[in-house]
Image (cartoon, rainbow, N blue to C red):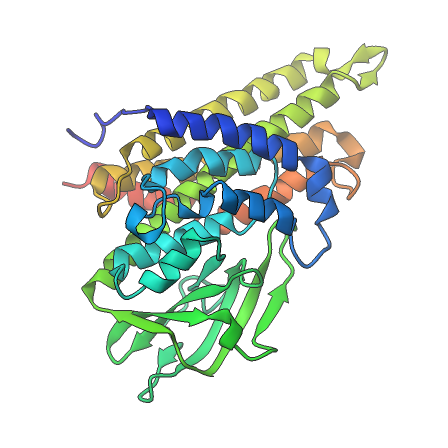
Length: 373
């Protein structure tokens, strides 16, 4: 089947059940009030809520049963990510699932202890960025001749919550993954950063001669990193689609209560039309996300899957950016204020755009995938 002709979009029975339960769970534990409780706290979530997620087996999504996982494909995480986004929940679940996928696809045997820990509820993250400019090269985090990790990583999502940290590094002439137990780092190694999206957490990490639990290198690492970045783009797209839906709900509720010149402002065409645009962009993003989810399995990602992941990320972050911008505008003079919920969505949109490449980045690569021979 050609890339353009690939239009599969279906959830199997397990994904459908997971979608129903995740929506209900996240709506009950998350939401705007719960998000606001954690905006200025060290953790963006309640440990009790994380324990419930672990008990439901969510950290084992995408992992095989012999490692303690659910045996489901990583595509099953898409409805969970969408539900987390709609509830503006900022748990380390997505970082954990992505770290697990990176290790699973690079060398599951070498990382078996960590993967079993993740399936059992340990949070994890991937430390990849060395500069706030993604194009900055060369990579300076290295595994030295003594086998110790030296260097720094920037803006590592959920680093403060992680038990396991997977670090991209250079070992000799090869790209390698260094797997660390976060408890072995120096006390001042992890320094939290302030993000524009304060429903999430990130930190810079310094490695001064840390001994990795395992080092994985070879051709499988590059292939695993490619899949990790595409899967990361897809899960952020799913999360953004959920946030766009919540943003639409908040905005429409406001349009139905605020009056101007004696009429509800939602009755004016100038606000009705862009509200419909928000809905159609969000629905389009959801279709792209579900399509990509339908294609995923445990094997390395092929061209169809790459196209689907990139399309989903480009559409979803554009949809959330548009929805957040309209929400702020429709709330008039108070849209930018801390007390107005509209600002939460435009902040989430600004943060999501930068994770795993913005829309322009993915459309540039889609042009080559779809138009070149």
